[in-house]
Length: 344
Image (cartoon, rainbow, N blue to C red; front, side, top):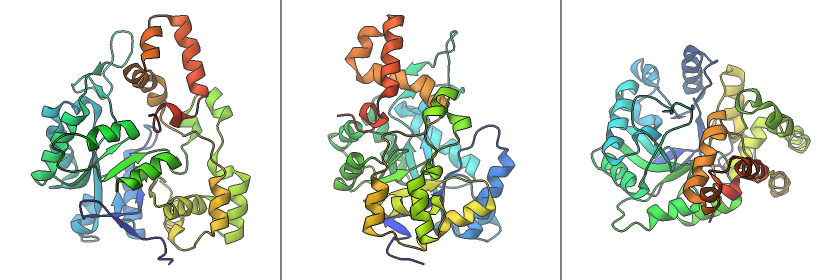
């Protein structure tokens, strides 16, 4: 095993996070039993960073609770300060755990509080709620203080949103992590400069049949089929997925990789077993397409509200359907980092 890439990284609060984790978010077509089976296999293989329930393996003595790094998130219907701890307590009850290792604010926007995951109005549009990032963060700090979470962080935040928390008067704890689906260089460098770990989900892309419209799917590259990536993989006698994961790990990114197949779960964990040369890293870095894969729900419903909150331009055109359509089409043609994760 190659220890040039560390198996864990020290967070700014002194705790450690494994650098390779198993992502467990799954589309509805994947049975819950399949996800649970994948978790059991992953723990047996050696994964210790699990983005979901691991109670069975703890109960049967396969692993100790202190050896597992478990993450949970403040869902967007719980963003109001008075609901942040309630959300975590609910998650802990479902997980049958007394604490999580990392508690993240899921995204810098909130939905109407209630039992619906995606609350909608009579026209099928998501119902949004006002959100004060700093107030929500203060309640995350409280969750850490009372021992419900060892570390706290954020997800899907851009530089400006991170700075809002970092510059908050009376800040008690900095975010230890920013979990995103795109690890663009500017955001990575900013997070490193603030001692914040950048964590990547969907590091191998997502199934285009599940996440994209037919038109988007046609224009979206399949990461693991990239010819340059495959040449580097053949050079090292590795799979394209292993090379893609090793690339991110060597950049200092914590990676969450998702698979429900035993063979792939085992193969992905072997990303530590070899080393990419500086030339390899430069070659792979040149493949940047300034895009990312993300869920249909995000694409269709979250995109506009993000801009409605952050852009004066959209506020001016939101009532004019024709111009709004043209604006969205133009927006979709932009690299996603330009309007979300690297906005300034």
